[in-house]
Length: 618
Image (cartoon, rainbow, N blue to C red; front, side, top):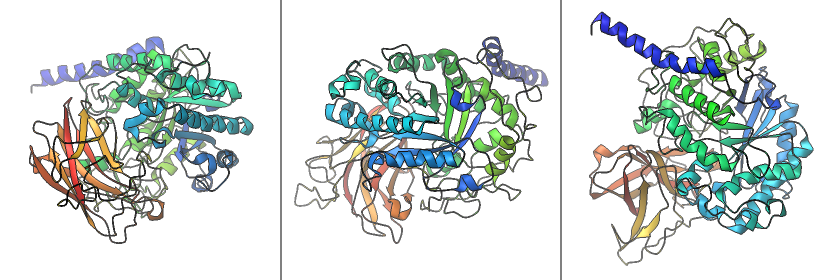
């Protein structure tokens, strides 16, 4: 490439990246900052109730978040159904100096299946009555608490509902039909389900609660952050905004709208995906990266367009904690254990002040860091190359210096040195670049942070044999039913038993792919697999599919610290149009029954088709 062409190409890239900044400067960030954020960029962490690492860190963190899964209302069976567990979390968090943040994650664990059955659950009046009675109880406890509470509503739920309704917010849901008096004036639609959170807040009088609506980056049908990199962003934003306006993003019968929108940049450390699935989830940190690249620039522009289109500010949640000094092994609690990522380095590394300002100008008001699963990197042992805890040290400098004042509506922050930040830029020496790393340890871990609760999206599942024929000795043969197996993730629709294919007997489990690129899982709860056993699945790989990898896995429960074991298999090693044996071996001393047994799939492209599972044995 000649120097002239190089210079022209560089200029084109610069114009591509700066064009968005010019438009942003002309209009400024949109929407008010809710008072709970005190007009400063909030920095928070996941921490389990009863823990005190944040309190003892000598860092003035702003917020502390925790999942509220089904069962929280009676302390998962260990107390009265009075919401006192939530009240305790609120008061404990405030006493330690933080704003409590509730990630409300209950819908997928309601009776009737997992994520793939979300719409079906909304249609069940008794399920909705019980579900919203719990929401009301939470809001009552928050009102009594009196201080600010941020309520993050059901991660990924509205994205899944957009898929399951074919983007129809008027699809039926039993909201007024639930019989709750407070919801009598709401429509019996999917939009009504989302509006019920606004209506219950009003009915209870919990004006101290900030409501956040979760926005999934794949909800338009294109994963704009990792896969669909050349697609223009505004049309994808518009598809989701138009679906969500009747759900409380726009004017509605409750007289209120959601206060903020919430996004998750990634649910695992980037190198976890690279090493276990061969997927590139690392974002380019360069400030000159084009908007058509897998980069922070592209993600920031998507956030900015959302802010401009919706008028809402952003909370970024469950941001991975890996840095480039991690060992690329599952995190059992030792120094530097966990997987590499660059998201903490982007926001708190050498250019952290500029990057925080860029994202504040895109509408971001909070950065919430936490692991999305056991075995990922944690703030408790994330030592950098200098031997110091990475996030604690660098975020501590930023927060102790006063943090970053947020831009008012219609304005933007100037570049570093131009005002707004009192931390001097929080510049550090950085850490070494990401290397090839080491191979993971086979998928077992100790899950050091107590992390998150899994999605509890599968039903009871018996683990018993369903052979149907004398020659089939399978533990799961799917001869009369799906045996409690359910689908989750954007790529899959609901599973069912079918006669289309069979490895043994006359039936198998049909796993339909709906045309959305990304990840999906099929799983069952409480499989009684003995310790150390190898589980074998028979998997039919359809010809011409866009499946790139499959991963049989097991997830143990709390007594094993949510230990996850997986065996990633590239599709290139399997035979299409045929049955393949795929296996996962449980570690010695594994617990039984398993919390979850399943298979994870990764797809690319817009392929629609069906794979099959059968004859699961151990």
